[in-house]
Length: 324
Image (tube, rainbow, N blue to C red):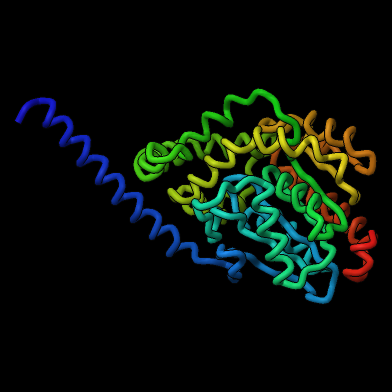
């Protein structure tokens, strides 16, 4: 056997071992962190969600950001705080947590909003206040722009709303490349992601320390599964194109909007929220001191108050919502 053949054999063997190891890691992660909610089948997609609070109260719908899942919004305290007064529905967005992300669709914010409009209709949700964090703000906006889903108000936290040059997002999108990305996700991407995860989490929470409850309870192993890495990489790749399309439609948003952003956000600059506030005459903005990208953990009470204001103004019936 030649030297080249020996090297190739070693490389192939190493790749096979990495693939087997990552498949095993995924199975172990899911066994240790089983679903915490229930499932709904909608438009051929199995969605995982939780529902809390009074089923007869006004509804608040929550969408998490890229790379996370339902547990992020639970650990922030928002789910429990809002559930005291409202019906709270919180989804794993497609590809995250335990929601599926079929490869037959391009999962832009608009595609996700179309899916959630149908899911909310199946769940009997009418005139909700919709709260989105980070990438979830784009899904919330896309949902508010639909004619088949009346949204009473939007609470948008730490969002990216206008296209800018962001090389970091493109670099994070490599696992989404067909074939090459598939190989990466089942070999080196989980290892690389595991290595950079502590620094990334510190950046997200900076200038604050990472909360102990997040360190102790957030299921990071689920975030490192190959299928969730694909979803996160796709959303990194889609971010700027999606925003380039959506920002032209911002003037069409008719519901009231509350914008929240940490002044010291090291991932998405607060100027993004300032610009959105200027583009939306009916919006109010709160720039939170000493808060970073995970402003949901720092200003939980303020965000819940913003939801309360919008919920008070919500129409009390579907008919009123359509007239509004």
